[in-house]
Image (cartoon, rainbow, N blue to C red; front, side, top):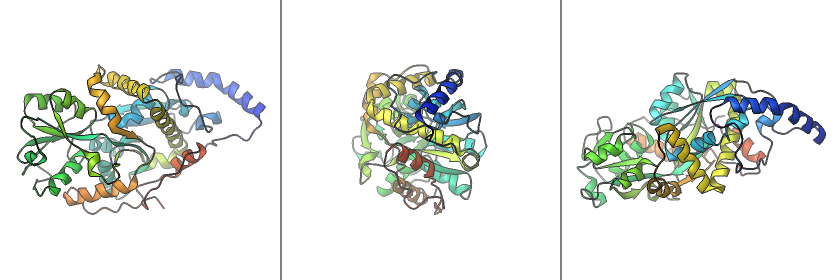
Length: 376
């Protein structure tokens, strides 16, 4: 595994850095996410993997994420080049997904190495593979999920009964949370078909706003920025999921890695995590600039940026964090069991926070817990 800090003298460090600089500049210029560090990028508090001045063990790393503000670490980290900067020439091949299950399929199929993803598909993927296909290696975000409804049809929480409510995909994080909320209300819904006291309509986030405007759905339990898009189209926030959690914190986005890639390329995983930690620090220190950066990346994905009336209310509802909030993942697993989407899972080993805690310690930050669910 590459060293994170040289023990050579100051003079020697300068000579090595000078020799490596032309190669590093050329490598950065060859990638598609910015050729230089931005002026407002965070100062390095610890030596990065790239500082070692040598190539990493993989020529390419394939990273998946969603074009959602709850994936701000990926959006900003790619847009600002903060992840790329740590890779010392290893190229990023990034791919956007609509929801977790499809990203898990890509990871299982060998076309993805690292992914930003919600807890429910992480659990599903881990359980279905009998603990063999992935590890959660970091947190990324908390919150940013809302139930938005047509105020002409739904005025109270009880009015949701008998209505058509969208979620992004069967078994994804919002789908599981909504099914659990329905159950807590005492209503019945078949988790496979979505039919019952509430009609759960699994709808791609990209088309949910059009479905809402056409009246084919009455509301949606969705992440940002889809929630605020619905509000801008006349919807009303009936419930913020944050209110359902005791500490008002719950994992909405984790960083996962295929176990094969983690075993074969731990140096690359460490470099990516160094980039995500620095990205999260920059986001929290520069919220307005980070919001603009995330919007620029969304524009690159969708062809146009989000209007201020959408992104301004959406952005502060998301908490960016390195902590995977592991205890809340266990709760969400229990919800999926209760919804009959999965059998009682064995989650021991789903986390491997070794590299993250190494990076955090080197940066002078507190280490985070796996809630007893770490790899042995």
